[in-house]
Image (cartoon, rainbow, N blue to C red):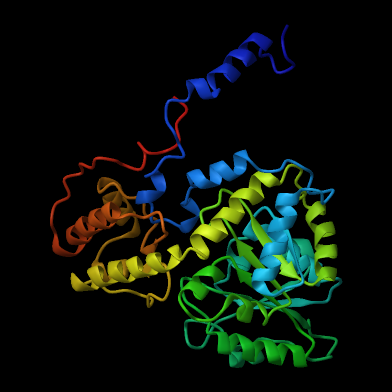
Amino acid sequence: MTATNGISSSEIEAQAKHLTNGDVKVNNWSQPGPAAFDFRSDVVTTPTPSMLTAIASTTLLDDVFQSDPTTLNLESFIASLTNKPAALLVLSGTMGNQVALRTHLLAPPHSVLTDHRSHIVNWEAGGVSSLTGAMVIPAVPANGRYLTLEDVQKHAVVSDDIHACPTRVISLENTLNGIVTPLAEMQRISAWAKEHGIIMHLDGARLWEAVAAGAGGLKEYCDCFDSVSLCFSKGLGAPIGSIIIGTEKFRERARWVRKSIGGGLRQAGVVTAAARVAVEETFLGGKLKNSHEMARKIADMWTGYGGKTSNPVETNMVWFDLEAAGISVEEFIKMGDKAGLRLLGGRLVVHYQIGDEAVQRLDKLMRAVLKGEQLDGKVEYDPVSLAIKLE
């Protein structure tokens, strides 16, 4: 018997058998994994054995029908943690931002004011415009670090002039490029926005980092906004998922929007079980603070060898000024490969799965770049050898 794609049923069975647990010779849940030497982003963090255990014992009911206890419990837990009435699971940070904005923006003309470097402007495939019909107003912070009330007032459109496109949403991001927007500044912007009937949304994919840095409490930050998107799969290490928070009415409409773009999940417990562990073990467990300490250590090492940084280290990101070091991004990445590290240029993202050995390799790389020392190119483990395998 042959399937419609030309592959026989016996071939399909043979391939399936090859992928069963009995044929898997590498435990991809063991540590260290490839993330241990990967500074490209905190999205590379991999799920832990405790997350696997949670997935294996999770409930398997339907979230579209709102009947899965694990998912409903996670939403209730996050709502309580952030002091918001309701929360809704989404598949990614991008989906969270887009669902939230489309929930808020009902009909043009309308505009969204945001930082010109923000994720919704640069990394979400133009979703704001295509999904909501909104014009995006990208604002450049005068201080070079984060938007202030004065920046917002300069760019927001609050006029009734029919030639203008009124600002209906201010969308902030915290942290952005590892920089924290102070709680007091967000409170100023929030108060002004309420006076003018403007909705506040926060891309809080890395808000956990700002809180871990001591910049303010999670509830206090979230109180400034009508909606917030929080990510489980960046620095927290869950395999997938984000969550958006707001009022009950917001959640009700957001479910509709989420469904319309394919975000409804059936057995959502396999996602939310790991997400709950990620929040409890990584965020509440204090692991993010250790990442911040390591980031400061790495920055001190770089400047100690004569290097310059292009941004201050406030959370888990270190910004090497490669131009000042006289090396191109491409060459830096190649040298990183030789040192057994994965890099994406001068931005190094330090997550909790980065270990001491990675910092030692980074030290050798720094000395090679800034002191002209040679890299031997020999490492016990390289990222490629630690990548996911099936045999």
